[in-house]
Every structure is written in C-alpha cells, then in structure tokens.
Image (cartoon, rainbow, N blue to C red; front, side, top):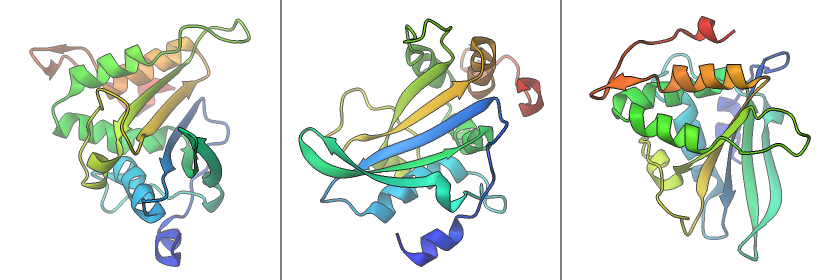
Length: 185
C-alpha cells in the first residue's frame, strides 16, 4: 500500500461499541491492492468529503488467503458503526432502500455455533462498481470476488435497528421514516 493511501488513513476506534463492522475483499494476482482498498474506502467514505472516516492503521489488515485454489491477499477494514455512514448515504442516492433491506435481511445468519441468538448479517457488494462510487449487489459469484460487508451487533434487537436505520420500511420506494444514529444506542 502506498504511503499516500496509508497517510489518508488515520483512526477512530470501535472499542466499547455494540457494533462490529467489517469490509473485506480478496485481491487477486491481476488486481492492484490499492484499487481494491479504494473500492472499500469509496463505500465507507462516500458523501463525506470533509469528514472522511479516519481508520487506524492496524484496522486495515492484509492477510494471505486462498480463493478457488488461487493464493491471494485479503484486505479487511474493521471498525464501528461510523463505517456504515457512506453506505447509508449511497443507498439513498441510488434509491435502492428496498433492495438494501432485502439483502440485509437475506444475509442474516440462520443459526449460531454456540446456540446464541443471531446478531450478524453479511452482504456482498460489487467491487468494480464500488471503485466508481456506486452501489450494486451482485446476483451471482463474481470472477474477481466481491466486497463482503459484515455487520455484527451485540443483540438481535440492535441488529434489527441497524437494518432499519440503513434501510427503513418504504411505501412506493420512499422511506416511511428515518432513524437517527442516536436511536441505535
């Protein structure tokens, strides 16, 4: 990662937050890791030109991984609820509140290994579309993979509130109401 991109990333800690948010994407040998990271940062920071989410250096993790038998890198960005502000804005700009709600509800995990109630959802976003500051949900597996967004809350009720904040119920595509971030705590 270049020092220019690294210098753009400073930090806000998600410690003591009831929410754990992560964005991750595989970087295949034919891809530029900085462009993949830019795709993730476009999702996180869209609509916030003067208030970009600062990210701790140690919250961006690059690990070796295997995808379809190919050795690749996996870039991950971890943080709190503030990482979702860009997505919140994009969903409204793109007028895809209903689609987002459907994806988030579909991504809720069915069962827990420990028997606890589920409080996590995982959705996939098109990596190439995110690079141009747009939002798209791939219908099928993409050849170069997608950006995985995982939202974990400390309770199913809080997860439901986050989903409601990101994608509230609508009538004819218009949100019936908007929750404030403060309503999530």
